[in-house]
Amino acid sequence: MLNVWVIPADEVLSPNINLLEELEKLTTMEKRMESMENEMERLKIENKAPKVAFSASLLSSFGPQSVGPFHNGLHTLIYEYVFLNIGDAYDPNTGIFTAPVRGAYAFRVFSKAFGNPKRAVTAGLFKNDQHIISTHGHQASGFISSSNGVSLLLEEGDQMKVKLYPGQWIFDDGEHHHSTFSGHLLFPM
Image (cartoon, rainbow, N blue to C red; front, side, top):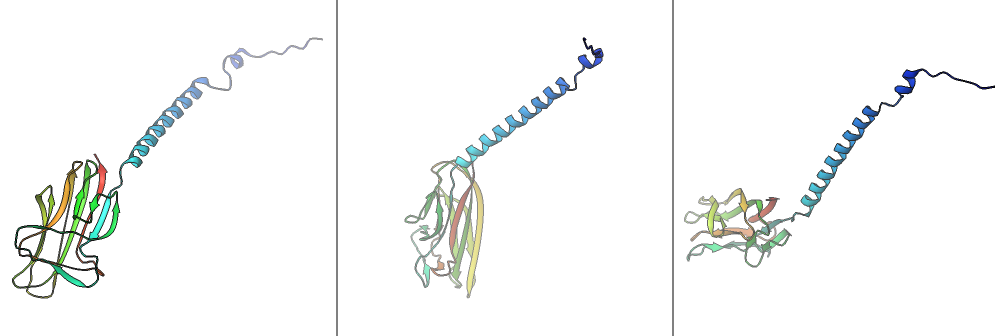
C-alpha cells in the first residue's frame, strides 16, 4: 500500500528559516568583526609606541646643599638623582632630555631655595636653548618654592634642559629631593 501525504505549497515555498534575515545577521557580524580587527591593529601599533618618562632630583648626596650662584651666564642644572628614566631619554651626566620621537610631551620643574634679600631662585626650562618657562621665587628669609609646567610638541632630537639664571641659587637635599625636573611623552605624533 502506498502512503501519500499532502504538503501545502505555502509550507514548501516559505521554510522556517528566513534566508534574508540570516544573511543580514551574518553581514552585521562580519562588520563587527572587521571593526574589532581594526581596533586590535590600532592597539598593537599604539602598544609599540615608545614609552618615555623621567623624573630626577638635583642632588644625589644626603645633606642640604645650595647650587649657585653662578655669575658667568646661564648655568645648565644637572639633576643627578634619577627616580625614573624609562626610555633612557634623560642624561643624568648632562642634565639634558633628548626627545626620542616626535610627539607631545609634558614637563614639570620644581625649585626650592633659602630666602635671601639679595638672591632669588630663578630657573628656566629651555627647548634647544630657547627659553620656554621659568620658576621664580624671592623672599628675605625662610624657604621659597616655585614650580611650573608645560606641554610641548617636540621633534625627534629636540633637547630640554633647566638653566639657573646668573646670580641665582637653588637648594636640594639628597634625602628629601626638593628640586626636581620631570617629563614624559603624552603620545607620539
